[in-house]
Amino acid sequence: MKQLVKTGLVICVVVWAVSSNAQQSDPHLIYEQRCAGCHAPHAGDFVTEQLIATENGLVGKASDRPVIDYLKAGHGKLSDQEIDVLVEQFEFIQGTGRLFKEKCIICHDNAAEFARLKLILRDDILTGRYTDRDVAEFLLNHGRLDASEAKKMVEVLTRQLQVR
Image 1 (cartoon, one colour):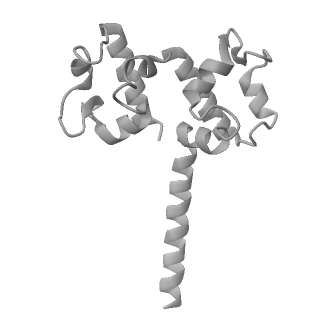
Image 2 (spheres, one colour; image 1 turned 60 degrees about the vertical axis):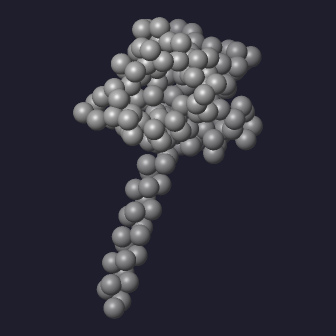
């Protein structure tokens, strides 16, 4: 009986550690838990309002200080892994612009939730979870997107499924 309890406890600890680690790599969760209390509620708004892209990476508009230096100096008390995940997400947001907010948010509340609830990757093709439609093809005639915007939106939505 004691061995069974020990085995059960070990399994619980392993499951907790794996799920905890998986959560820590989700940039949305990290931002919401560690940053949104003092900054904009959404990382996209934070990036747009507070950061600019330079040859030295993303820097604060007000401070002109690289965001990675600011975080590594202890702001937010983030781990190195969390810093890397956030900076990568901030750079991705900066690189893709606010396309979802400009074109999609009127009907779809949040890119991450939308992608995670409604889409799936099948053989590396972004597909409607329930419609089985190829999203890249669908977006060519949806949401007032031109071909380049549709391609960029597929990247944005695909990333939402890959960063968890």
